[in-house]
Length: 350
Image (cartoon, rainbow, N blue to C red):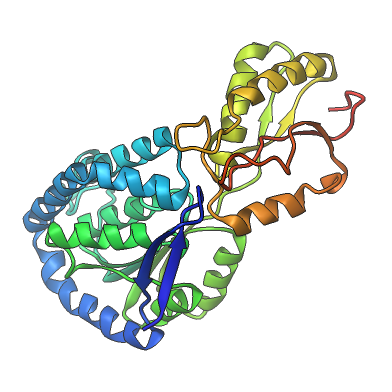
């Protein structure tokens, strides 16, 4: 049996040694989910009761979830607490406003309506930056409308994936939602199974392209992708600059920038540039980590991510000049990085 070994971004200690599902095991796992689908999809009341149990289980496990989010995913305490808090709330929203807004059956024969139709086995591929929240955020609606689910957490957070699987089992949901550990080969084997009707993934551009190519000959499979973006902030001439600086800093440096919504560019009129830069230099100090989970910002996911950060910001990346921050700075025995403030030039062109 192969294993995924997870190490803490804070100190490099081994967090978990989790068995990996071999690709040869995938067909049987998906077949079981396909066999469970007809029963699960028929009984709305049973689904609601099971998911409400799951919400209760997640609430009771909150301390364990927070501790592992900090230790394995490098979250600071505030971010770990916020992510853990979202898990039962997602179930409440999905069973409440989500299903109310889009019912499971037609409510009249007249007006056009949108209804849910459970499609079969859904594959969910989760990311490392919100390893439970974004995985769970796709799993829950699929289960709520009657799909069965093969959930593959990020291979960078196998301990959190294992914990999620344990909590599903406690709630009595393991027969309709299987947590399947592994890397790209496991994802490929899941997506290739003919019983799969839906694929939902959170990741980068390469992941999206690979999935689109794989499923190009199967248009009947619904493919939903969340791939992030390059997010600009536009500061207008009449902006409240202190408020703008606070919002920009929060967007750019929270979680070490490991968010799909992270602010990557700021466009500002020449006349406001100097004042905004001064404010951002000060705001940057509030987001400097201290190498502990109690600091202002958490760690990068692992040493490899920090090495990529160093390589990307060596010298003048893309011709940019560094106004503040040191990419080589170390913060205790962690993979935390210094928030950087870069500019296209130093003459106020942008």
